[in-house]
Length: 384
Image 1 (tube, helix red, strand yellow):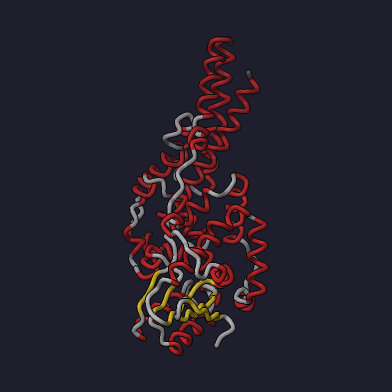
Image 2 (cartoon, one colour; image 1 turned 180 degrees about the vertical axis):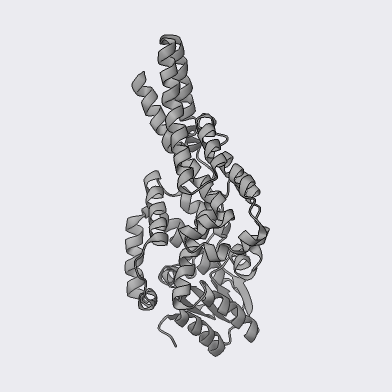
């Protein structure tokens, strides 16, 4: 039996816990071999219903409505998912294996031997939102930087390195470094899922169970064997803190107070300078950032005009206005959606694809407007 398999005894049942790498050809072979040998009653996989559907529904991109994505505020969620998937896909293309192929091999092997299939992981949106909520502002910046660095970086990842990530000593070292690098992320992304996965797997039906999970979860899951876990509680999406909601109104409140003070206490010329100090950095930064991602001229103009206005209104952002304009101008087609899998593997591809370019424009305008707002606040404060 493979060194990557851990056999656990629980209440008279046998759980074969197989740790895999999601872009490993060897892991695919190990999954198939283990299920054929053990002939389990149940096969558990590290998937939730959303990810399972995404992996099995080839037409999922065709169902996306770009206008609805923008209006629902799901742009960052979708774009971050595309970046992560694109990075895995690049590795998969390098090694000749689809990302998550070992999980799909487990699904097909379970059907072949007549085993019941259990999707054992927590809902992906709950995981991502709980992870994001657990991060401080600076850790959020670090994480975004790390994601983009991994996506656009040129460091070579060899198949040997991928296989080393299944080694238990290596995994323990990597997990320790990860916990130290971004402390707030380890609990919701790793520890909570260790508990959730182990709880779900130990309650799965049958006397013999095969569980296929990422190698990084195996050690942590063993610690929670037999533990009582409230999976419903772990699946709750934390509410937005009141302080965060109030923070959105800080800049508008400061600026309106500054404008009132400037209008009543200073001459008309000084007040005009304050208006320029607010409008110029807002407009210029939003326009420049949208130009970087090659937005249409009318979209750049829209970001230029909208940014100083939307920065004073927390209920709508420059990204939403610019994104909707770019979507209206580009009119992404079903063909663009079908090509997302191909184009998500590079920044050039994301910018070339009309659907994903709208997402990039949304993010660029949002970032530019935010930077311009802080510059504008500082400038106006200096004039006071």
